[in-house]
Image (cartoon, rainbow, N blue to C red; front, side, top):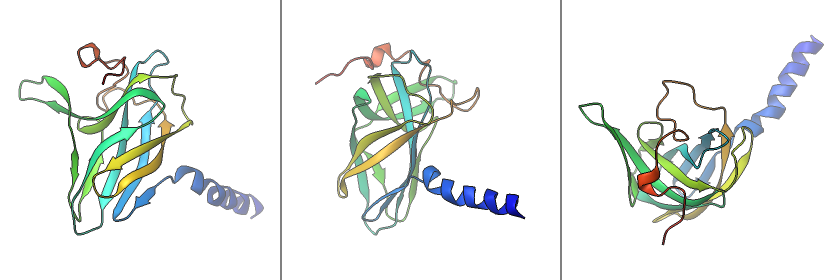
Amino acid sequence: MKPVLAFLAAICLAAPVFAHDFTAGALEIKHPHIPQPAASAKAAGGFMTIINTGTEADRLIGIETALAAKSEVHESKVDANGVGTMTHIDALEIPPGETVTLQHGGYHIMFMGLTAPLTEGDMHKATLIFEKAGRVEVEFSVDAPTGQGKGMDHSTMDHSSMNHGAATD
């Protein structure tokens, strides 16, 4: 019986470590994370779920962090011919009563010009900027690397045409 109790106690104590959700007014931000890119990566993708429990839309209009020279909201798409594109978007609409998931192959945060290697288990502070909710302090966890076939691996993509390696005005 003692091993079972010790195991349950360990789970209860570890639970807060894994739960890192944030709330700002009617917005709930669930598990902001970055799959660990290659050590030499100059860019990485950030993902999360945003739930708007309110009655008015809000918009994610920016992100600030010291982990990269530049951070933007991007959208990845694959056309009918199988050609993938990634574009910067000025704002991401979070409709009232809806859930928006930033994930591989869709909307995501693009961290460009990484200032240091990202290591699994690390936490990096960032500020999400919303049109109505304002500035929301969050932490991105660096999770295990994304496996083959689970979407775009931003660490190995050619981002040269997007100037991900340097900040611009």
